[in-house]
Length: 378
Image (cartoon, helix red, strand yellow):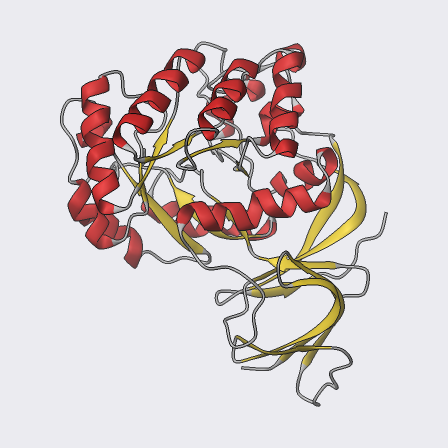
């Protein structure tokens, strides 16, 4: 494998680097990080001056409908700078047993896949799924995602099992405030780790803020559509999401929660649907927005740069228990960003069509792929 030399990029890896250095990569491994590394004749040399180099982005909330779609959706992830993405269990078939987990692990992929198992069999909320069997195959969390667990006894039992197995419990909360409050109470009672998905209301942010005073085991996420849009922006079915888009004060609370640390991570809730389905009438169109391609840019447009890196890399890594970082002797897993690039997103199927953005992914280097477009400018 031909060596790679990245020259003069600004490395931002909190706790390790915040400076301009060169990175030498040989056989996929970072072998040297220093100033003024001299290239060998057979190296690919990338001029990264004025570009930002960070560990690969991590998304803990995506929907990939079928196992055979993993590579296609992974391509969207790479475009957006993600090198690790999760899979929520509402696949076809649902991820509710060890056999499905094994099939996912064998699938052709171009990003690392983090697997979330179902809480209940078939996500039907009647009986617990084989959580222990799925844990042995490598799941890191359990969730029934868009089917909030209504039976508090079933969720209590799931949390007890998750605590024993070291798994994260991820809950979709509808109606939001009541379910957030109930699920926090159950998490405090069981001392399990709870992650609240796509928080969207001011009251929910306040509930999490209070809970964090009692425990470090409760985390939550925001998705771009809840810190970009409000209910006033809804024009058509491209904006149809669950929970629905909220009021201005809710959006402001989400942004504040991201900046003050109450909201731990940004996740995409990437939910692809065929355009012919999405453009049906409001009652018939499916819920969901694709988010992998422009999540980083949306975040950089709305939030300070250091907050974006924390919320899209280091906090997701901590919550999911995976290692990340730009470290000599470790496999290269890097995202390269042009932080000054200003551009318009163009996709008629997306509610972000025509949206002005700042910051663009221009390269990814991982064990699966290497590409580098170079700086885009303004």
